[in-house]
Length: 318
Ligand SMILES: C[S@@+](CC[C@H](N)C(=O)[O-])C[C@H]1O[C@@H](n2cnc3c(N)ncnc32)[C@H](O)[C@@H]1O
Image (cartoon, rainbow, N blue to C red; front, side):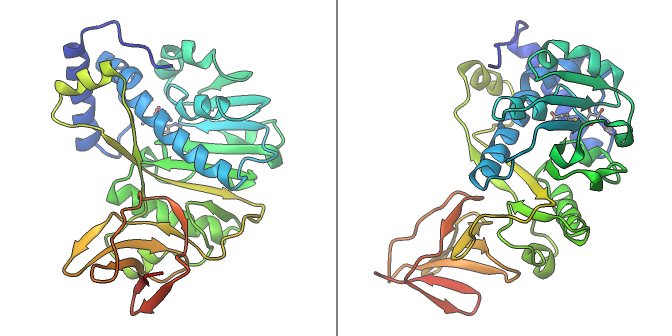
């Protein structure tokens, strides 16, 4: 789906580095769409990466029936329409609205918008003007809340929200506060959370945040591009929330979500997990059994044979 760029990989890698430096130096600033390096780097690098992130989030939502009965999408801060395209490629939709502050972005990515389901594009930043039935509409923000101070006015009229954000500590923890705000407003979190209690990462830590790690198989041209750059994307991370006014229908009994990477310690291997507001680790004692490494973000069954020891769920030999 993502075409090999028709410029040299060297030019492209310079543009990517320039935009990457911009995002690092000005994390709260608007994407500089008026710069030609930005359009080039976004189309061939950030757009595919963010598409992969949105695809992952959509798959997580589909496993719990999150998108059932939703017919329309509104993509706030749409840029090239990354989230909209991933949604269109996975769901049966009737219409898609893209809201984007930058008219330069709106005219730069028309070829991508053409692939969407009955798309409308606007630079008018007003959710009140939306005419679709909000009880069947998903409001999505993909990597746009990071450039804003608040959710857009009127967000709470929508049945469903999908928010995808950079997995940095600042954005990730900001998203945990947004999670609580949504719950306080009557929404239920369908993913990544298995519960509606307070988030243990916010409650018991000043530095942790929740994010998934996606293992990707990049096309050859992308690997060659990365040879020109000081960073690699063997795995892609993202932080997200899927929230609905409707209560979740899936069964979370004896399920846990892996919220940390595997940690080797003396005599044991452990991974942070989430199932309620406690900060707990799934733990393999080396003298008892062979440790596993489970991808961050995955939901698994609580091992039947386990023992609770302090903040550890210790896997017992069967
Ligand atoms: C990093 S880009 C993300 C683009 C796209 N959603 C994606 O996931 O690839 C952030 C976008 O949000 C837009 N944006 C920033 N602040 C906004 C606001 N207050 N209202 C609407 N769009 C905004 C920017 O113009 C930019 O296109």
